[in-house]
Image (cartoon, rainbow, N blue to C red; front, side, top):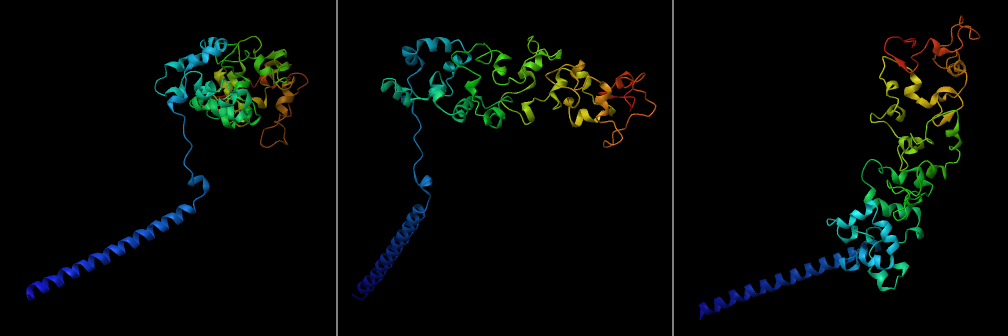
Length: 325
């Protein structure tokens, strides 16, 4: 009996310990739950809500469905490079065909052509249009600065220059061919290309986009840079690039436009002034910085009428610091 009584006391003690431990665990879990709920309740509403649902594959109807109503537009579109998106199986239906740009069309079709159920470009802001195009066209060097370009800042959207459906050029899907497309806004530059001395843009030998990147650059005027990150002028005028042992400082500091007018000029070599000496003397006077002035024995009315008659290597020289040769 004593042995049975001792066993009974032992197992009763074990049971009391287990009950106490269970109650302590429940209290801890309850406290943790209350703390978690309190933290969750203090989150901002934007974090407290579930993320918006993304369109599923059932929301897309395919380009053939679009063709049933928009056959004329489809026939124009299938002749453009965007038609190749139909073969893009990696991106799924959100990257294919009409819905790659206009978004899922199931709701649009179910609504009997409800325009509010699909992305209509002309009914959105320039920023929204650019964002839609840049979902595919953001890569590459041409579009790296698109969101910071002068065109973007002026609310000029992609479809101001490009037309995916009714392009007038086979390349780049432009609404007009250059330079007329650029002239439609940049009227001030149009007469400059009719000057006696000009870059042959109107003749079709040079295009505006050869020197400017319409999608934006880090430099002013959206001017491109050469492959060596020098002035874009050196892309064609490679003999002026250098490097030279004796550099003409304005070429490196201010660029070619310190002496030349890039679009066109009434002066030979597209210089800013008709008199070469006056152009040189705008810097080379005794009162201007550290540029050497003209020697006193230079009679510019007769023998020395043009500085470049002697200083022929004015863009830079490897043998003479005065640019004689």
